Length: 376
Image (cartoon, rainbow, N blue to C red; front, side, top):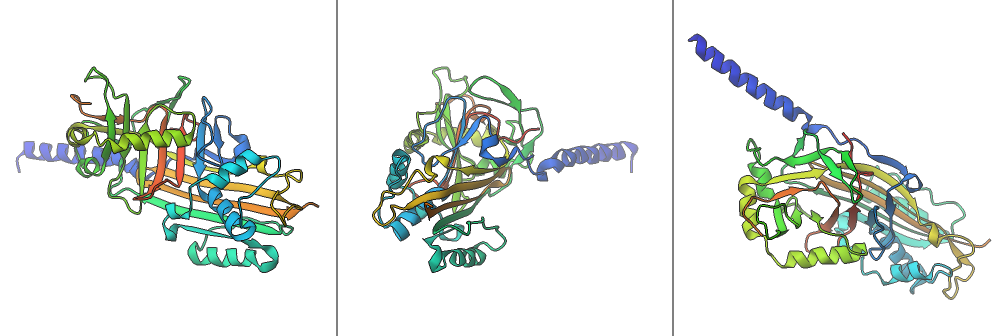
């Protein structure tokens, strides 16, 4: 073998070695951004309904597990809309919410409600052990007379895992603050092994300025169009007054079906950059609880909500999204297109998880700042 051939092989092996080294970090999970009580959060809030407002400068998180528990309490125990004296507005919003168990696949949730004297705790433990063995069950409290519980354990796995992007990537929040965060996706010139990645992404809406070479004004994307039973949708759009209004706006734009040409261009030269997340939040809906907030339903006038809590464990990285959320409600007596699309989520955006074909999502998050994003 001639010396120059050895040199060529050496260069080839070296190039492959560098490529493998760059990809070696792909399997590393994102750093945990937050773990603890919502009282420790400075720039993020957990809300009970989609009708909740989006405060300026705040990340807003909603999951339907609490609504599920409330619905079970309403239908299986109270058997009418729940009236909470002193918290009428939030109770009315929860009673009127259309979100239900129908939005989640049967194998991805458990919900039950009943009286402690009738063995509801045992029913919950048995049901959870059968459906989600290994998941820890919250402590319900020995003095609870009525317990409503719901758990969602859902995934949306991408058909092909994206690449971790090792370049410095800064997320700019609504106040203009930049934070270096972990990111996945692929670059416009990333052709090695990116064919499947480009193919699985579907642009659902893409709005350009009159200047065809400018960055898009809005874009909505399904990160893995064949993922089942759930999909992950990201939307770079201006926020509306509430999560519900923002979600409705996004769904309206999707129905325009205006991104066919952009999808073709994206498959050739598009770029995708999405911040990773890993966080756990434990939240108490204190606005519903307290001895002074008695139930106004006949037969329950001596009851009040002693515990209204929700935990959300959320993982979002190059492989997909996974959420485990538990909720407890306990009562007791007183006593456009020229340049290729670049889908870069380096500014506030909406994220939601939805069962394909369902009317409504089961997890919605307005990401305004980097508090719950994984840092580099």
